[in-house]
Amino acid sequence: MPAYHVYEDSELLDFMKSGHEAAFDEIYHRHWHTLYHAAYYLLQEEAPAMDIVQDVFVWFWEHRDHLVLTTLRGYLLMAVRYKVANYFRHQKVRAAFAAETAMQAREEGSLDQVLELKELKAVIAHFTATLPDRCREVFQLSRLEHLSNREIARQLGVSEKTVENQLTIALKKLRVRLGSMSLLL
Image (cartoon, rainbow, N blue to C red; front, top):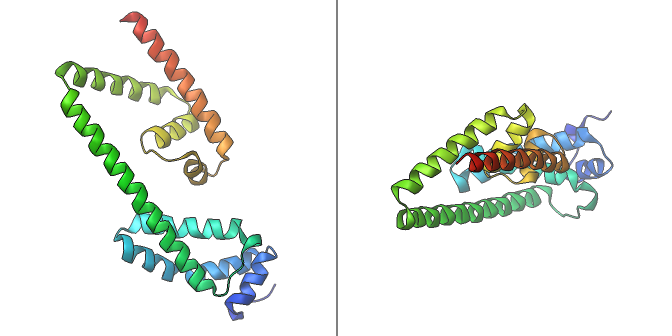
């Protein structure tokens, strides 16, 4: 096995395209720090900066067969900038949705609605606690942390289909639970 640290980026890229994970590891170790600092400089937040760099490298490995680039470092830095821009767009949409939801709650909110919402949240929290571990984890990541199925699959190391199946199971059980509660009311 070659000592990859002696190779230029272009040579490492060729090795990586041939499936050499050690070449990818060398690229990762060689460029991770620079990419993290670029992301952190733009975001001023540690966790999202680390997540973005990880996402870039995951995408980079998964698409290694199709990469056509002139400078590896420049390509990776551009990918980080692109991911940061997407992050800002996503945050902006979330903030707008939260503001709109809050405004609607203030306009339409009554004490009864607030109490019903608290009760519903309590029922959902109790329901969530009764789910099997993996199903509960997927449900919470999806419905409470608002992660996409792809993000959940990546975070848990499972397929997107597994995430979809777990969510389907949880939502069916929740519908049954809420349906039986409405009969009692």
